Structure formats: C-alpha cells, structure tokens
Image (cartoon, rainbow, N blue to C red):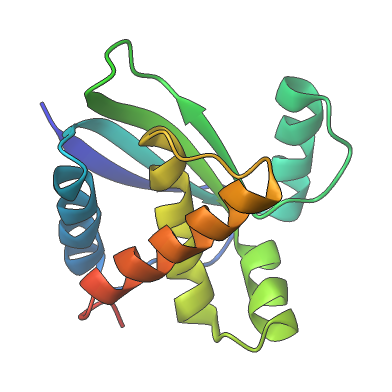
Length: 143
C-alpha cells in the first residue's frame, strides 16, 4: 500500500503541513511516471547521520541527507530518506535560502535520487539543481 511516513530521531523538530508535503511528493513521483511504494522520511541529528554515513557509506563527514533505495522494481519508488535538521538549518543560513525552502529542497533531493537522478559530476549536480527548482515550483502550498 503506497504511503509516506514521517519519523523523528534525536530532534525536537516536527514537520508542518505534512499532508501538503505528502501530496507534493506524490505529484513529483507521478510526474516522472513512477509509482509510490513506501517512502520513509526520518528527521534526525547530525550525530545520527554521521554515524550512518560512516557505517553504510564509509564517509567521515557531516551531510544533510542520506537516501536508501529499498525498491526491487524500476518503476516503484520506495526508500528511507534520513535528513539532518542541524545541517538543513546550517545550510539555510550559509546559502541564505530560509529554513523551509532548504528543508523542501533536501526532501525532494532524496526523492530525485530514488527516481534515478545523480549528483556525482558537475553536470549531474547542475541537472539535479534544475530539477529541484522545478519540483519546488510544483509545491506551492508547502509553508
């Protein structure tokens, strides 16, 4: 059964307007001609995400997001998206983008990875940013 679940680990943060955000994410997935399976967002601390980054990816760096693809089918979008609220806050300040905007960008960034978009090369990063901007434009009632 298709569903988007929201979880919290080591943070007092709580997502606002959850129904609007879920609807937006579903629209993005459908626009890419894919089907939603089970998608879990886990909002957490830097410490938890750093531990996962070390354990699963071998990276000893802070990051704002880690996405795990749990789908066995190319057309089915399923996964776990871990987001560090501390990194989102810091990046919002660093890029002067506003917390909500940065949060939405990171949330959709994880979905785009599950949809097959990559950001390993400079060209891929530019394409990912453009796609994020397009997706953010779709989500007009997120704040």
